[in-house]
Amino acid sequence: MFKSKPGPGKINPDTTDTLIGEGTIFEGKIRTEASIRIEGSIIGDITSSGDVIIGENGVANSNIIARDLVLAGQLNGDVEARGKLTISSTGILNGNITAASLIIEAGGVFNGSSQMTSPKSEVVQPIKASS
Image (cartoon, rainbow, N blue to C red; front, side, top):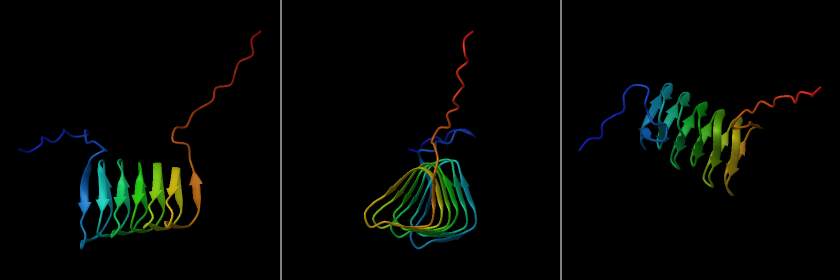
């Protein structure tokens, strides 16, 4: 009936482990290995090894560090997405971003500056001249 939970250090970042529900106001910092979904309001920074999803009714006054971020609500703060940042048609982002990939759907709002990063830093080795 109940799923067994993985042992310490084995949390899957692809699972949504935390939900801030509609009508809920959370104040404080959140650190999670799994993904988080926000349908209510949060005031405080979020750090996630997984994804952060802010639903249409979600409001975050936060700086966010995550693998991917999907924004359908409102975010006031800076974002560092190691992967993809998606601002949907209902999303509003007021802040600066650093991301490997940025998608803004028609109707989505972004006020700030952006910096694109490579998802994988590749070190190019110099070619040695043969004698």
